[in-house]
Image (tube, rainbow, N blue to C red; front, side, top):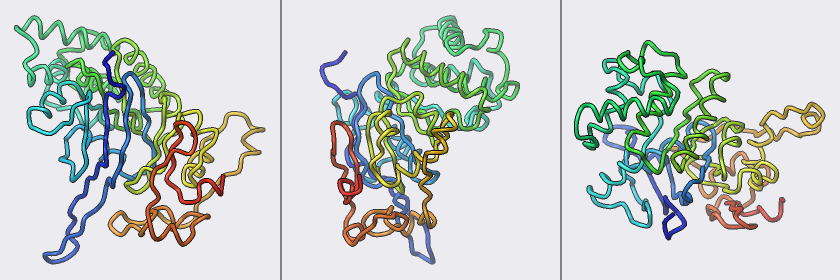
Length: 326
């Protein structure tokens, strides 16, 4: 283990996209707006929120697939700044994409897909070593060696996602961003793939940022969970804590929607149904972005975005009235 606690640290990350709104006029779409968090080595941080809240953009900006508009990304205590930093950081980090159908090149064989990161970073001395590495990765994710010469379209969704995971692990990364890696798969396959993520984490000492909108999936795999709404992080706590005692009104609504297998408990649970529609990120409300749908909104909520502050040990929430309403 290293001498610093956090493997990855994100400070005040912003990612704005310029959107044309008329002739010669553009407006920034604030996909990620001032998000900060840190992930400890060997930990899984779950990132949840509804579609369009900026979760995927956080993952991609974090790996410098998008150039951050502002803010800092630190890896192993070092700030990622120069091209050389990014190159080395990319060798130590990887991404598993959401859609196994579109993230694999149909013209490449499975062994070429998996070996692509090895080719880019020149991580073998000869063809034989390349082949051995590919077969080792395939067995790690539960694929047979005879699959190596076949093409991605010959496989099912679950197998394709395994190919994508093998590719992500090719450079022996320490940090993996999993962007909704099971949402495109059948429910029966989801559990297998998630268990595989768990096993690989133990075998390879991996650290995950696990992005998803399915709260049951996130709960199963995450140590801590962060909740995003419209580009902002509104709550961050241990996985069990955020399920048992969500403090932010938005998190409460999300958690109340999670199905409970016990019918008695399920009947007693009150669904917190939100009124109103999600505002467009192009015209986000002033102050707290959630205030237009929040049952507790007050004057202060329109004036300023509450900062993410620690209310109890390790439980952070961004809400002006969090202490009153809980």
